[in-house]
Image (cartoon, rainbow over all chains, first blue to last red; front, top):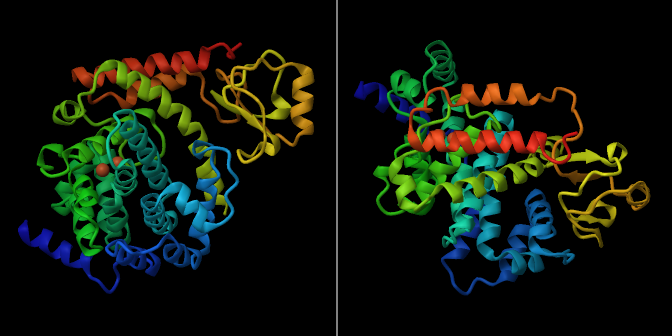
Length: 281
Length: 109
Ligand SMILES: [Fe+2]
Ligand SMILES: [Fe+2]
């Protein structure tokens, strides 16, 4: 069994065919380690990417950021903050990879991103944008399986249908690993920070998350909520069990959960339209 | 809450979100959440290039839209494997209440 997993890891991580992050992300990441990097410098890099620029301007002009009309990238970056722009750059490139692959999974990921963001804000957690980004990326391993081992993917989906089991169980059965672990491998090869890679690796097994358990818990709960809502298509048709450790870590209760569900469902009405709009672009 | 084209808006429906001139948030706000629509107001919104509005409840039946019974059935199916778990069962009840309210709410006549 160990062989199969090792072999698969080799296939999946073969750098010649691994999706790469666009140059703009690497440039932004390089800047982040340099405190002197000015907003102007970042704005210049971002402006070189038209799609990204358009998304940033749209976000900056969205109602949640007030009613100002923002028309330049550097003003947008001042308004949104450098971290939001970086998250957006990352998610925008992930979107490009996912879009070609599966609309259902993209919608699921977008929904989990929205839910995680709302939950993180509600609990007044630090680094809400990072949490939302981790949530957006949480199932990236599924994209990789689909890109690199489409036969195995078909077998997994068939097993899920035939035995009515959770996808992660079918994955472990057929490929001897799962999309969370694979997502973890990919995060390492992309040199993503641990606060993103841990939630990706452990969103189905929160107890294994040691250093960023709060973020991992948020992503886990958000994933459950979006599956409960039936929004998008993750490949799973059943709601997973809420992990007690995540619930306790976030000190959730019935009232918070009920308020959150109402907020998420309201937001998803908008997201649905946004997602359709993105598809049409 | 449901997003509907202004053509399908009817007097008596209640706005679930603020409305802006031209329908874009960067536009000037025209009227606020919780406003009860009148025929005159709908005509004015139309003239101001507002194409869609968000209203309370779920007053308009959409092509391919599900009835509340179908929605609850789908919900049951999704929770089939985890209803025994106390936390999941709590979440199920919350979703059931939410669906019932949002489909049958004030606008659901
Ligand atoms: Fe997952
Ligand atoms: Fe997921």
